[in-house]
Image (cartoon, rainbow, N blue to C red):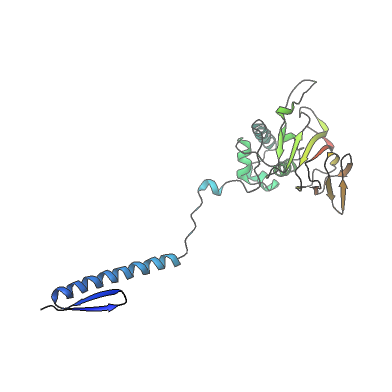
Length: 260
């Protein structure tokens, strides 16, 4: 005969019973406790186990490197792509070979040629140096005639990866020349580092608004509004904004050899 006994612990009261039915109930309860214990242990082990990072999709693994792509006008992107393909094929260079010469990823070069990516100014300088052509050879469409009007609303502007530095060509690339003319703009506090240009290249720059520091090997110069500077640009050089407003400059680049 089953007997019942009440045990009290605080506000919780439990009932202890004896007999076959009570034994079966205790066995079932023990099974539930054991199963719960296994579940909790599995959950703890899963939390301790380090998660494997998800594999990157193929397109991500072949994507351009960070800092290679910048916003640009839709009309400029196809121009750069067409010029790059023409100049590369004229020199019988594969994308892989040009990548090694320029230090720009093969994926980036391919996307530029297809008009799918707008490269930064720094990337275009690397490509133009590897191809031994002026910067403008990549960004300006060929045209004909003796008079050219470059409307502001149709300007072809290239920017750094963060948009703090921009360059606009103020001339058409349609005939051989040794001189190029650019408008440069820098956001307050921005820095632009330029690689060495072709041997014999000279930069002549005037500050129209703001202030800038120009650094060449072994020397730094501070320039304010109206100041101008001429320096050899066939060595690495740096532009640093020194104003709390946008700095605007006009740059004339002169090459040792005729280009175009």
